[in-house]
Image (cartoon, rainbow, N blue to C red):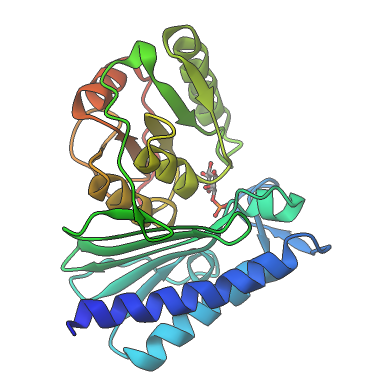
Length: 272
Ligand code: IPD
C-alpha cells in the first residue's frame, strides 16, 4: 500500500465520522458567531469538525500541515509549503447548515509539493461522497463521474454565488455578472457551497462555475474532483488556476471556460 493509499483511507474514515456530526446537528438549533461580516457565519460545529479532522490526521501523520478555515479565522497564518498539507473546510455552506438547507459539505484536499493528490467533498445529508485522487478519476459514492462536455456558453448551466462578502464593490460586480450572463446562458444556479457547486460540474449536472472571493479551503478539493472528471479549473481571467488566489472558474471544457473568462467582469480580492 502506498503512502497516498494510507492517507486516502484515513481521510475517508474521518470524513464519514465528521459527517455524522453534521447530519446530527443540521436540524437542531445552533448558536452562530460572525466572522468577516454579519453573513459570514461560524458555529461550534464548524470548529468541532475541523478539530476532529486535524486531530485524527495529526495522530496518524504527525508531520502533516494544515490550512483550515476555522483555525485561520482564529489567527493561524495561511502557509502553503511543499510539505503534505491538508486544506480543510469543515462545513462548506455554513449558512445552509445554520438554516437546515441540505446542501452543505465537508471539503478536504491533500497537497504535496503544492500538487493536489486527494480531494474529498462529502454531503452527509444527501449522502453524496465526491472523491478524486491524482490520475485516478473522480467518483460519486464510488461510481465514476464525468463532466458534461459542453463547449458553448449559450447552452451552459452556470453555477455562481452571491458570496459572503458585503463589500459594495464586490457585490456590484457579482450583480453585474449575473445581469450580463442571464440572457446569454441556459440558466444560473447556486447551491450555497462553492465545493458542491464545483462537484456539480464534475458530475455533469451543470457546465461551468465561477466565484471571486472564495478561499483555498472552499475550492482545493473541488479543483481535483473537476479535473479528474475531465473538466478544467482556471483563473476567471483565463490564466492558470492558483488555489491561493481566491478566484476560481471551473468548466466541463477549456473552450467553455475561456468563453466565460472573456465576458466576466473581474474582481481581484487579496490573496489567501
Ligand atoms: C462559503 C460558501 C459559499 C460561497 C462563499 C464561501 P463557508 O463557504 O462556499 O457558497 O459563496 O464564498 O465562503 O463560509 O460556508 O465555508
